[in-house]
Length: 627
Ligand code: ADP
Ligand code: MG
Image (cartoon, rainbow, N blue to C red):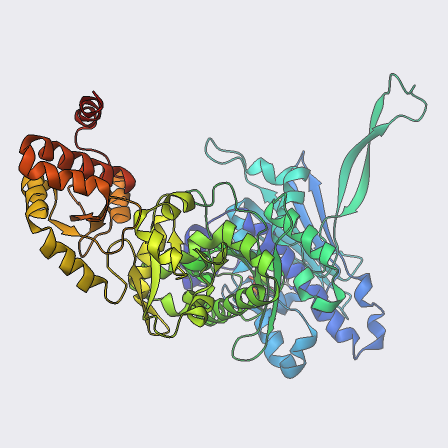
């Protein structure tokens, strides 16, 4: 019997497809199972209007069978089946999809069916693992059966054959193993179970396979048990995707278990976000805020992304395009019947739809976080501990493009409330004449609290935000202002009205001593000035405009030989006894006065958490003065 040739372009297409559309060979099973599911769906649809079908939704099934000896893997269904014409049209012409035509014909009724196929290439993916495929099929309503056979690009034959029941068997002869590829794995029952669970878990019909199990022999003794193996037919898929169920019908515990199983987390999610959208793009999404920070979260091993499904069939394990960087901690699934199975990293033909979904999800996640913040403050603080840093990076990243979206979600520790507060809360508590949002950056809350510059402010009850992470200060810089209130560091700038005037008066009165100190320290400091904000401390160091000391430390940490330095301005408390001693020494004993100047400068460095230029010189000086 003459072999029919695939159309020439089909041949090329087949080659192209086998080598480029699919990234993983293993997805062939997903494609064949999806076709079986479509076939069941079609007959199911027919049964709605045709009593003689005699089958209900529950009667349809898909079966996997393995014949290891002959290297055969068979996928059978009791769906609609194909006649000769169908075989010619659907399997003889690549990129012709009977399923697509079916959906067109059914029109509006299509929402009652879950037909997956539409591109007409899925079937051929089986040639990635099989060197010969036979399709034995009998169409519903016909008593003739046919066998379609092909070795791949070479063409196909169709012959009449026997088949007792309606439906289709896809019989794949699995290719021999090579050095690079162990095709034999597709004959292993554990591997097939794994693939069904991975890609086809939510197919609506049961996918069944005989699996072998072991049990204790009944008559073997308890203390010396003997085991025997037996086989049992099992349903491999769980069938109903939890995200397709109405949120009110799912118990919280079910969501938690689904999350833990699916994303391999030991902790329950902190919040579940269920989305059901219809309109320009139809999709369902089930998103989770993890209850704990994944151990690799802040490393480059962590991969962001959502699982992407089309009608319950997995398309992509981690679709990164669905999540913006600032929400990369979200885990979850998105299922849209508008997407095709053949989407892959290389072939994102449905870019536009994905973009719409991603934009909607971003809005949804933001609004859920706002809800968490207002409804469950303690919960939000836990979330903040886990992922707050990510949101700060989000504000700073991409040149501040997302700062407006994220700024109301930020928390910073407050000096007066003694807990993290939002910028809204801070602004609402600002005194009438307060112009700025004050912050102080340092290594720890304690250290900031003890800084000389915060002392006076705290005394008159001014609220200060304490920044202990490097991202905090960058955030303030990128935000610049919140609700039109600018950020201002209390460490680097005089903030009190009238302080400048008092400082000026003090500078005039003590000019000689201040000039002496500047002279003694030389280029180490940019300026030496009288301070109006120190109370019990003799000195403090402030940074000039531009870089702050915390930023300097950050750059030093990431690049130790970096020459980037903040400008140093030494402020002296002219009312302090230490200053008095220095001032007296300037005339009485200039050599000693120089030593005092150096000591005070080193102290200022220590308080600011900056390294001393000459630590042992400092220690010697202290000892010398103690003698
Ligand atoms: P798609 O599923 O995108 O339509 P495929 O290459 O996977 O493309 O399948 C091509 C066509 O072959 C299907 O549309 C369907 O008409 C037919 N077909 C494939 N497998 C079966 C099956 N098990 N039962 C009935 N028809 C099938
Ligand atoms: Mg298909």
